[in-house]
Each structure stands twice: as C-alpha cells, then as structure tokens.
Image (cartoon, rainbow over all chains, first blue to last red; front, side, top):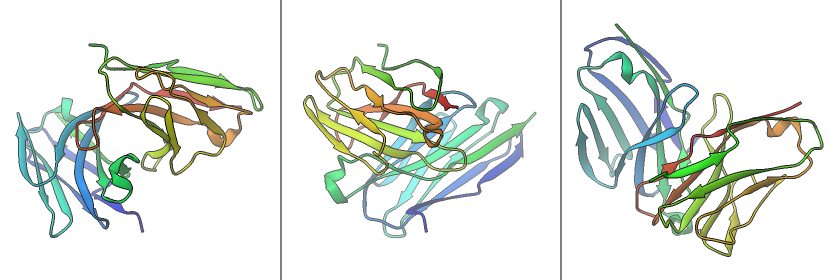
Length: 112
Length: 112
C-alpha cells in the first residue's frame, strides 16, 4: 500500500463546479504539500500545510493531522484549472531532509 | 528570479551512453533533490543534498550519481544509460525542511 493515496485518480467536471481532491497518508508527517502540474509542464507548489487550513484565491487546502487526511478544494472551477494535482508529504523520519513522498496525482479536467 | 533551472528539456540517449542533467537554483537554498516521474506513478527520490559537499541516496539511486560542489548547482549523472531510465526528471530545492518546495520544468529523457 502506498504511503500517500489520492482520490479520485481522474475527475471531469463542468466549469463552475466545486471540486474536492482528497489525500490520505499512513506515516507521521511534519508537513503536507499540494502541487500542480500542467500537461508537459513543470510542477508548481500550491500549498504547504502542517495544520488547519490555507486559502489562496479560489483554492483552499485543509489538513486533519489526527485523521491523516487532507483535501484540496477549488471553488468556481475554470478550464485553466485542468491539471494534475499532486499531494506530497514530508515524513518525520530522517529529519525530513530526505525529500517528499508523493501520491500518484489526480488528473482534473474542467470542461467549458 | 529564475528559480530552479534544468537543462536540457528533452534528450534521447542510446543504450550505454552517458549524460549529465543540469540543475541550478538562484535562491540560496540548502536542500536540493532529484526525482524521477514515471507514468502512473508518484515521483520517486533519486538523490538529495542538504548543502554543498553533502549528498545522499534516495529511494532509487542505482544507475545515477550526483555532486554538489556549490550551493547553486546539483547535476545528476547517468552512466551507461538503460531503457529503464526513460523518465521525466525533476530537480527541486527548498530553503529548509519545512519550507516551500520549488521545482524545475523537468527533463524528458528517452533511452533507446
């Protein structure tokens, strides 16, 4: 079983819909990252969370440390939000220096 | 700021050839990482560095080598390329363990 699981793997929605992407993890972490990757493009950091909730524009990220679960929400979705969204965690072990552990990503398509 | 710069963006290698993937960051970050991304899989850590002169193996280091002679540069060397090294390679950096991660645009490598 992967240490970081994302759901759904694929999501197609209509423009304007409220989108939720989920991330569950099975290890102790010091931080959780949400990343965005456009087709053929690089990876951009959206949020880094260690507790609570963060908001940036139409994006909201929440984390529940006790339940080992995080969600990424997109309000008023737009076709330009179409991308792969990746959840990654910084594990407590190794002092956290040894990189991030990644989920497989959620492929989101927003149709006009 | 340029952020994290990777070169080349694309490369085709023949089996047995060698090459160096370049990565440079201009943010004075201590931590640098090399990941590979295979279809349908989460990114996997190849090597990482916590500062100039210090490197360590990640999850999938076989067939690769790194060096970190300066804070800015973290090249990844492929010796004797194999088809299993066909992948997209990402370099990333961060100032600390619990800070935002910055990624390069990726290098798409095909070994034939």
